[in-house]
Length: 257
Image (cartoon, rainbow, N blue to C red; front, side, top):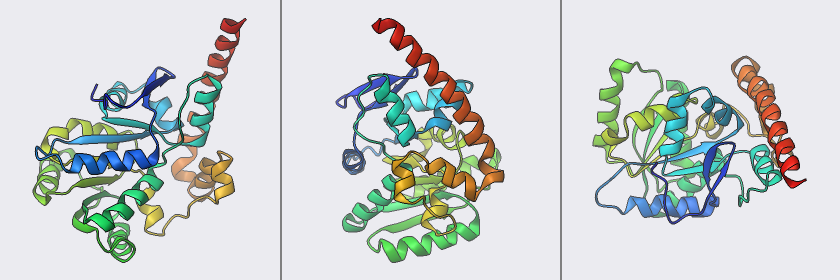
């Protein structure tokens, strides 16, 4: 486990989480940036879908366990932890964390490598970041359509770019497992997988309205926008999670009695 040892940790659903706010996560990333060894550190945002995938994917479970920070992404998972008596400060959504890192990076001259999505959307994302975060330098950008045979070339590009932060706009579990497998070859102080957040920031997918986010229904908004892509992820994993949570709550009630 590569957890950051001076941060409070909690355990829920057989998974360790770091009890850390979004602001503190950003602070940590910029602290890692100053390390002259350029050791690669990873931040994983765990939502309900990833949590349930971990139960049948040992490589994903190992990648989350090895992350330097594992934060909770998603209101339903925050609520579930609290119902089980596990104190977590707040959710840390990947899209919001990415925005905060880029905003702070614009003030501090952050060097960023972008990996993921289609070439068309990636090109647009580079334009958006340049306009919205002018102090950020995009030192490399590559779409997410590469094969295992390309891995060494991809890691070489990232390493030689001397990026401070690698952002991966790729799906789970690929992004978490790939980063852990190639951690030593990246030599990038901070790595964050943000899934479909590239498409949100680039303007191809809209973010759920704030009331839906607060109600824990952001997943439903995303499902309505991309049903073919996301129906299995949300409907299947959400159903599995509800069953798991019900068993955990029942067990807790029996223990209390």
